[in-house]
Image (cartoon, rainbow, N blue to C red; front, side, top):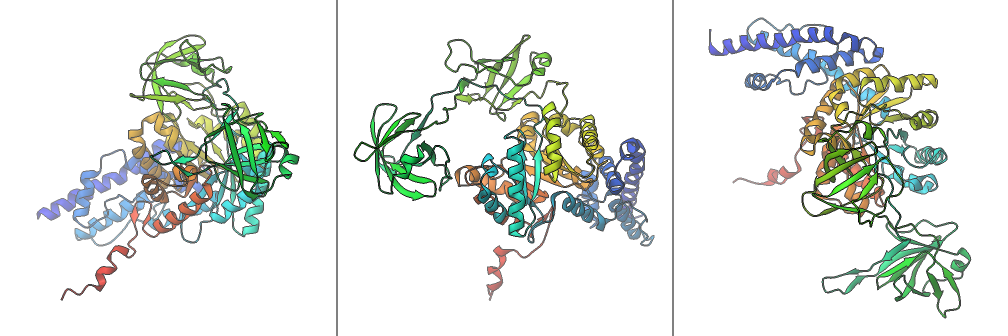
Length: 610
């Protein structure tokens, strides 16, 4: 027997052995797959098959299959059994036994993609003409009153509007949803509403507020010369107008006094430092004036503003308090307390800050890790008392970092015996059922969480609302196959890769690996994925993207939906993401490159070698 024939015999044996493991896996996972929705049954079986396939290291087998021009199994996620059967049949044919592929795979090769696309449309709505990935946008609070803002986002390409139930209230949510429905109808294109349950709030408590002061600061060059005047928005204190430019500092004043002003007027004031400053009403806009100054100006609540001539005066209305922060460096000890009353910032004693989740104090242990603000600050628990935890900071290792109120806390080593559904979530679910096309389930960790959510939805009489599991904890990732199979008891199901918390919980160095594994498992289950956290974040907040986030946005095309967070330049971010996803859709589907013509080679066709 030739060496090639021996190799083919060995390949036949190994591939057939893999096929036999699929049946064993079905028997092992039958308690999980039995209750799934009828429409999801074959998808659940395929997920189990994929789990079984990936229990072995297949790299050597892949290389040997490729050597014979056979499938390396690297794109078998959506149709595991069918792929193995076809490879086995191809090997048998090469060995001279004829072409006789086995019949009856639960999911044929051509069906896997179709099932995923069907499920994505049912949950997330139809795709755009030039791409498969939809764009989801987190609505800011302003979207409740500003219908034009929502219409702008829909026109730019938003296909799903996300309402975060951790912010605002039911009245605002109703207004947001109504504005989305109206904008979609006016544009003649679909835009769904997703509502995100808050989940257990593990966040830093409040700090004492700072002064109610804003700063207008001009832009200067390296020589200290002003190259661009500072700009602000002078508007009514009773009915503030929308700033005509993103990022303008709002100065509320008496509306009657404002009505007497005209473009070109000059205002005089003493700022909070006592310095005399002048503001020019540079441009009128609906609801107020854009004001400019070429000197740094600190304006506080109650600052007296005089019109030209000094007789017609007003006071600046209520301004937001300056957000305070605790400065921490490596080696510092911060006390995290059960008491969530506003903590002082300038205190001679060790810094302290509250924690919104009492269960942390009953379950944390010395030596466990704790992270703040998406992992920007981290340390180790060095002491635990009934009402406090002392944390020695070790990250960042150099310099200082600012810890503010309302920032997320992650305790990846601490086992918290809490439900993913809080009392607030249970109260909010009635409104979610009324307003949303699907709900996003925050901080899910184990199958019992999913079952409880389904029970609550059934209690409310809802059996059709779509459900998206947010994978953002270490426990959720570790239980992912079980979570997916449990969720598939309901018809319309999806997954969000919440990369922010997940990276903190599992380590940033593992994020890419976990992200890929989640995509593969969801493709095996034919479930759509939402790619979330920090997508084009710099563009949305500053107006200019980083090179790295452009590449990240291009990679996001492998998901069925991509989520953007709010920011002053969010409409620009939607337009940019729409363009990136449209371009990449012609080059790649999931892990498969699509061989459209390369633009970089077009010039080569014109070259005459002679």
